[in-house]
Image (cartoon, rainbow, N blue to C red; front, side, top):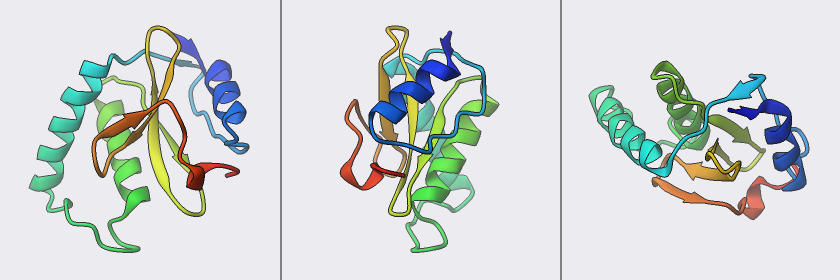
Length: 119
């Protein structure tokens, strides 16, 4: 488990000043968990006809919120980071490393993208 306060501190240290953490504790996610969840998410999205990007209707914030809900429904702790310019997800490993996850592409990084800074 990783504390919500630790996550919030990490996000704020990465210039996400208004990070919202909804839970006191988060379960760690292995990279393999995220890969498996992402495959299931894509299958679910395809069944809902939600794979195509549509500006202001099916864009980054929609993907991030749906990936969050999908992971949460299966017991995995994944958060959402939102700015005026973009939205993505984050997850923590058992080593308390925070990764930012792009649900539109399936990519993960430890560095936050410039458009996400100063939320």
